[in-house]
Image 1 (cartoon, rainbow over the protein chains, first blue to last red):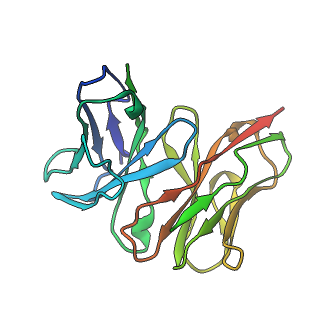
Image 2: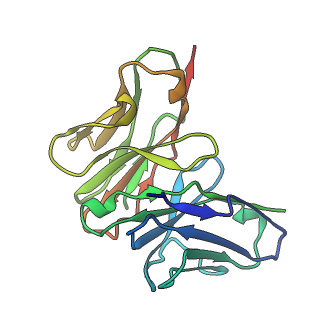
Length: 116
Length: 114
């Protein structure tokens, strides 16, 4: 059973370009969370999605960032017109069910975004 | 507001010595508590979790943690560390009844020396 997969693992973008980060949850998991880790910081929650629905985006910057989790295919975190401050590691996590055991999240290896 | 504090940003320790990594949280409701480990350039791996029941929780790699509700703490311990335990450790909390998103501390870098 494959774990959470993220690609690319490393992404370099110039200022003003778009970044697309992909996350495939564990098999059978329908809940996806995105977190951002800035240098020397812990992970910060960004967005929580279920298939075709954004449940909680309270941690998302209000501009340039968007996320989706379509019925088919991976979840996508999209950053438009990237700036240097977007450089960070972006982690995706998935869980099986909401409820007590659903709080256990399994993390992918992350995508390290560098904006030059 | 819910928050997690890891008091020590770095903990150096010699091999085979005991270690305790401290974690305190603030929340007015029931919580679920987690410790994750992150090896360099990798994702997070769950070490252990507290959902309910016994306050002493045992995890992988010989780690354990104790939930103390009165002190709002969830300290991680290991009686004898190995070189391979060198990594960054994150404490995280999720509120009962929430959407499940985790609130993380800033992490503690454990460095085990021979």
